[in-house]
Image (cartoon, rainbow, N blue to C red; front, top):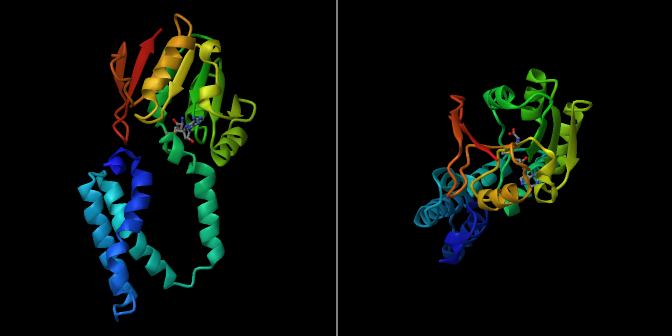
Length: 242
Ligand SMILES: C[S@@+](CC[C@H](N)C(=O)[O-])C[C@H]1O[C@@H](n2cnc3c(N)ncnc32)[C@H](O)[C@@H]1O
């Protein structure tokens, strides 16, 4: 069951292809394309459920080819598809490897960190996305020295333009970033990197500094403080004092 150990995105790639295999003998036997894509969608749904993929991945796999077929029936210029793919690739392709997609912190997440950061503190957002969290923080605490690192080129560009003169935003990998120069390190990533990130925090962060994870726990390490944000995604901040 190696497939079960893959990320849902990679597993879905195999599932979408595998769901075509039993249907191949039907091609050319008078079945309409609409019927074939619907059967493929049904099979993809069954296989996704069998592998225990989360509900929204099951829906994506069930609808992928039926929607692609529907889109083919319209007059949409192919360049729009290329543009859509380019935007996806520039914002999210790396998440196939990092297992950290793009989603954004709420303003409440910045408010709670603003209330705790010491005067003049240096703050780093690991994977700063579109720069929203840093922008919110700067609006509330202009005294803080802000930095962000982001590996997706389009996200980085948006952050950089948006935060020009207010934060240093680097294009790069968070694993290459030394955390020792920061008083507060903020991460809103995913469960996948948390154990390894904690080892980096322990190695590099100085005594007295704060490590803040939005929503994702560190296996085996209870935070010193947990703050419910009561925002749209019902997120919470997990805060460790080093
Ligand atoms: C969930 S988003 C959080 C965005 C922002 N920090 C916020 O809270 O609104 C995670 C971001 O981390 C970036 N990312 C994931 N792995 C990374 C890595 N190894 N190095 C740099 N950025 C990374 C992703 O591209 C994505 O933009």
